[in-house]
Length: 174
Image 1 (cartoon, rainbow, N blue to C red):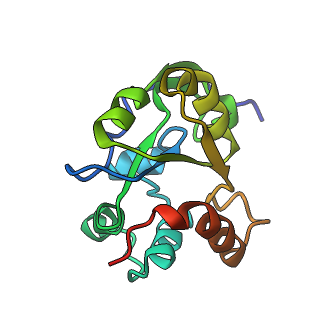
Image 2 (tube, one colour; image 1 turned 60 degrees about the vertical axis):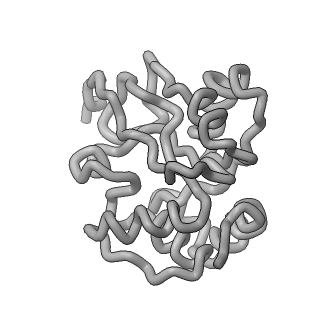
Image 3 (tube, rainbow, N blue to C red; image 1 turned 90 degrees about the vertical axis):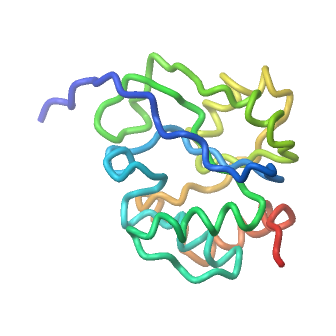
């Protein structure tokens, strides 16, 4: 079966943050077709990002389509969310196929929000951050295991342990 053709996509989604700032910025690579269709981050119902964030913050797991609850999980706990890439050429949802990258202005967002730490959701996000943003931010990122369902070797409990150790100190718990 031939590979899917490359498609130019973008811009991605706008950053998600509270006006008063954020202690930590979580970065994906680029929104999946499902996320772009939903108009919100981690829109694939099998992605473990939102259940993981709920567990880390002590909030209820939001329904797949409850975007307000998802926003509240991050914004209420001092976290921001964006993607490294503004636009790119990609085959379907394959991060491995990403090329012709136009990065987001992560340095500007980090400065604006007063971000203390950057976390990348998966190796692709980490690689892209190091290449396109770290030279401008001067801030290294912690690369965490991907919450994608394709990363099945990482169970929800293992993800919680890894993400909790790294991101936990930056989560505002009231």
